[in-house]
Amino acid sequence: MSDSKKELRSRQWYGGNGKSTFMHRSWMKNQGLPDDVFDGRPVIGICNTWSEMTPCNAHLRDLAEKVKFGVYEAGGFPVEFPVLSPSESQTRPTAMLYRNLAAMDVEESIRSYPIDGIVLMAGCDKTTPSLVMGAASCDIPAILVSGGPMLNGVVKGQQVGSGTAVFRWVEELKAGTMSEADFLSAEAGHSRSAGSCMTMGTASTMAAMIEALGLGLFQNAAIPAVDARRKQLAQMAGRKIVGLASDQVNIGQILTREAFENAIRVNAAIGGSTNAVLHLIAIARRMGVDLTLDDWDRLGRGVPTIVDLMPSGRFLMEDFYYAGGLPAVMRALGEHGLLHRNALTVTGTTLWEQVCDAEVWNREVIREWDAPLTAEGGIAVLRGNLAPRGAVLKPSAASPELFKHRGQAVVFSSIEDYHARINDPDLEVDETSILVLQNCGPKGYPGMAEVGNMGLPQKLLEKGVRDMIRISDARMSGTAYGTVILHVAPEAAEGGPLAFVRSGDWIDVDIEARHLHLDVDAAELSRRAEGFTPALPPLNSGYQTLYRAHVEQADLGCDFDFSLSSLALSQQRVSH
Ligand code: FES
Image (tube, rainbow, N blue to C red):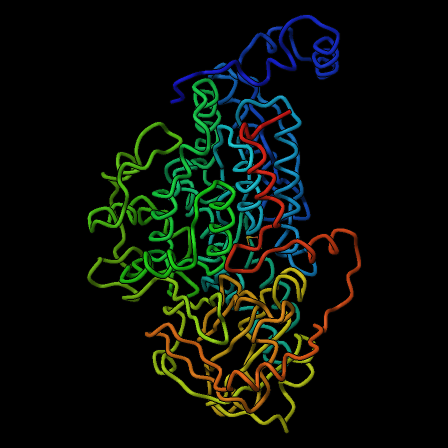
């Protein structure tokens, strides 16, 4: 609780009887509002990423109505407004290009509206971090309500996870072993209810991060989107935010270093997406918490993945909820000394009070600590002359036989170059080669596309090769796996050493030692760098120009460089 409670911020718009107050209230009354909603009760913004172009969030308009019930019940005044909704499945060239734009939309909306507290409504991958980044810059009371995952996909009696069988079906249709009618039917069975992707991909990971950070209510991550308990959660969030706004418990009191450390360990225990690294660093930096790649490596080491969910495991988010959900995982972490138990949550209680009685109902889905899915669930951060500022890899998704490997580079200068040559029968590549992809980072693509898990050459697939080391400055989908080294910083387009790798160069990878080395001497690398100009695709909008000029490198979370300086200038955060 704040020691010195100030007048609610909304009173600057709605308090008194002056000319501007008249205007603020009068125009709002054209919606049929009675006088007393302006009597000094907290004004609660409901910041909604509802959009029919973001199908994972298409039910959030209905869910927002439940939040409003809760706000009214607790004596607040709810006001819903839309913000940009980057859609992972529909937005091109990549939704990540628009995460920061959406964060700006949220931040400026909060700053410019008479809001005392906010409920953030998100679901699809980028909508969660963008909303939290925007709210973090303003440091007002906030709760995030996730939309929840879809029900398990079911196709011909088989359970399928979001995105996990698509490649196989496309191949079967091409080969004539699957009919077009079955193909179209699989599309419907694969995504058969409202909600976000139901594997432990980026959307589920980020919903789990919200719960682990204490910014969402109990079971925020896993209740299916269409389960009635998702509506209960939304209504409870509406009730809770009124108390937080009245008591002026700002998001900064929730998003502490301890909260981020809890989230990193939870990410390891659930086998979460590598995308969480970027998003949590970006949120933390906006909160003034100096979270680094090294924190990810250090805190995740030795934490086993105990959740057996696709893409690494067998089950899906619906199963995870019925098995006990995230509280059961956090209890296990707490019992092994891997949780800051006193971290505050938006419920007003500590994280440990929330989870200490959680139970596991299915030990196949949430495993015993001593019988994990993988013993090392964390994120490995590799460094060396090929990635001076770091690169990341998910050891649990990698092949143990490739943990220490020396191979010759096969370099692709862009994703188009990769597509043009990867299946060329004359491409000089074998299973010991290392595939290197350049110019797919934040500035190079632009937007850092999810193309880092490049498919293997057809001729090697036909030989039975299933994994090779791949290195790039790109990202990887949360539903992907393999020995894939991502987020190389600095990126090729920024003149990082990745730009100067040539086919035939030897590369040494040692995951245990966290080492990534290009075996080319420094003098030769300097020669290659002389007169360097990046081969960048043309920009086709004003926003893309701003993005390329100001986006930071992956080790800093790919936020805009000016987002932090504006925060530093604004001590009161929500200024007018
Ligand atoms: Fe929206 Fe996967 S496409 S969560």
